Length: 218
Image 1: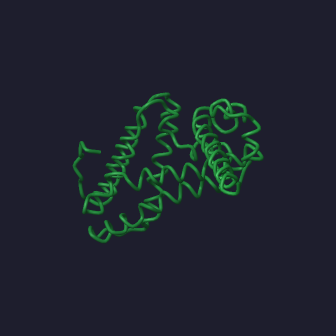
Image 2 (image 1 turned 90 degrees about the horizontal axis):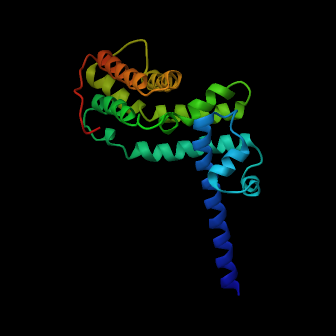
Image 3 (image 1 turned 60 degrees about the horizontal axis):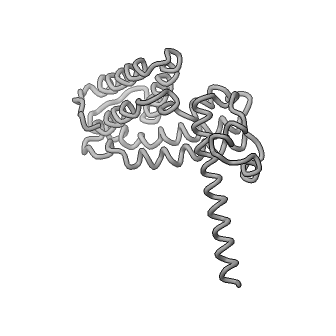
C-alpha cells in the first residue's frame, strides 16, 4: 500500500508540474500576442486547455503569473542561447558579432513568435507593477551580462578604449534589439527589425575598427 501511495503522490506532483508548465507556455503566447494588460486569465486558460481551477492552484493573480512567466522566459531563452552557434568562433569579437547574427536569424514568423515577452511587458507595467518590472529587468540585464566576457576580451585583443564599458555595450545590444521589436510592431512587418539588427552589427564593427564577414551558417 505504501509503495502504491508513493507512486500516486509522484504522479500527482508530475501532473501539477505539467499543468503549471502548460499555463506558463500559454502565457508566453498570449501576452506576446495581446500584451499584458489585454491578457485575461480566461485567455491563458483557453490557450493552455486548462480550467480556472488549475490556474488558481498555481497562481493567485495575473501579476503572479506574469512574474513567473518572466522567470520561465529567462529559463528557456538561457537554454537556447547557451547552445547557440555564436559561442564557437575563437575570436571574441567574432563571437559578439555572431551573437547579433544569431539574433537576426531568430527574426522569422509572425510578430508574436519572435518579439520579446519581457520587453513587451516592461513597456506596459514599468510604473504600475514594479514586481513585474523587476522580473523583466532581471531577465534582460541577466541575458546582457552573458555578453560581457566576450566584449571585454574583444576590447583587450583589439586595444579598444573609450568612455564606455563592456557592460554598457552589452546592454546597448538589448536596447537595439528591443527597439527593433517595437519598430516591427509599429510597421507590422519584419523588415525594419532586420534592418535595425544589421545596423547594430555595423556599429559594433565600427566600434572595434574590425570588419567581420557575414557567415551563412548563422
